[in-house]
Amino acid sequence: MSDAEATPEKPAPEAPPAWLDRLMNGPIWVLLVVALFALANYTAARHYRRWDWTSAQRFTLSTRSVEIARGLREPVELYVLLSSRDPLYSETHELAERYAAISPKVRLHLIDPDRQRERLIALAQELDPHLLDRTAEGRTLATAGVLVRRGNRHWEVEREQLQELGPQTRGEEDDNASRLLNAKITVERRISEALLQVDRERATTLCFSAGHAEMPLASGDRAAAGLADDLRHLNFVVRETEVRGQSGVPGDCDALVIAGPQRAWPREDSDAVVRYLRAGGNVAMFLDPVVLEGRVVPTGLEDVAGMAGIGLPPAVVVEADSDHLLPDSPPVHFRADTWNEHEITGDLRGASVLVGMARPIVRAEGSQGATSLLLSSPQAWGETAIAELLRTFVPSKGPDDVPGPVSLAMAGMISDGRSRGEGVSSGRVVVVGSSEMVGADYFNIRVRASVANANLAEAVIGWVTTRRELVNIPARPVDRAALLVSARDLTKIGVYVMLLIPLAAALVGLAVSRARKNTA
Image (cartoon, rainbow, N blue to C red; front, side, top):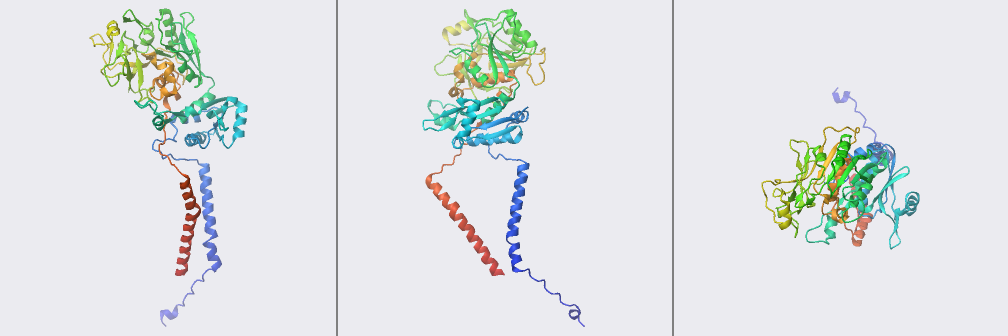
């Protein structure tokens, strides 16, 4: 008997019924795909993660913003009050969602004034009636683009504050299109500031000295009102303090600002500032050269600056580089744009400040601790022959002059100051050789887009008070790519989406079905 005869042939397996084959190739797979899709969505909801593929990382929060959001002591309500048609809506909405994602204490609310008018009116009635505005067309808008609330405290960020205009083009004073094209988004900075406004237990107290012909806080040509108003919007308490030897500097002043004194400080008054520094205070000085009888007279604050290793020579900075001189101006009025590495200057690189009648700032003899912040060009120097300079405005460099490049601002810390506690600044000193940085004109939003005087002043205040949000949160570039869709384009898109794509899918399905029948 052969092997073929000995081994019985195995019967072929029966084919599954046609209805079972259709079921396995139809609804079961659909249900499986739906289940996998639901599982993926559930996992994504439990484990939030988003990626920022933009070249400038426009939707990635800075380290400082993450610290602020995660360090909130109590829950806050974050309201975005922009219309979905607003050009800033996408950036603001996306960044607001990032804050809510990284901190469970940030609760996000989106109120579109065009679609949720009643909610906006109710919020305004509860918090601030001035929150509402109406256009000529009768639309109800919010004066704020973002609002942050904690309990009965709230902070509003105006829509204009969410964006900074780009720099002004030389020779094109009214080139608004160019300035909008080069604008920068400040949404992150403003939201972080607003979170700090409502979360701080107390506001930072900034005292402006008075009694020596300093710049007043009131409005006027020579006033610090612009800086004071900006700081009040950043949760600072700003007030004037008359500094006298007997009364001294109030202990609740987190920092003392001495802006443009025109009279020399008596020794007993400067000694009061010295005592304040040693007790843990901080000082920012904006000191113009005061010229009397052809010479720069002492400020009376030399000992205060010397505590931080900073010297104040009796001279005026003269600029000889034509690229930095201002048109039709004497050489004591110029532009400076060279920044040294420091926490204050981190976001000022590439920016310029306007300088007029500035005094040079040097390191005190034997000191190595002070850091130069802003420099003139190498062709500049500190002119000591003031009488000749003011007579001809044709200076010549002499052997007794301060060689260039000249430092225009310097920061340092005193070595024998008392600490005021962890996370609180103590013993910080900044000296700027001109009060131009705190002039009211430089805090105009259009001027700020061209020169960085106001930004430098605020960064100085941020450093001496450890208000890092004034220094470390950068503005982001605007996404210049735009999608313009016409009515004709919308019609084409509708045809593609509603007709051609489904028809293509149906044809592919028909082809697959015919192919399977032919192979069956």
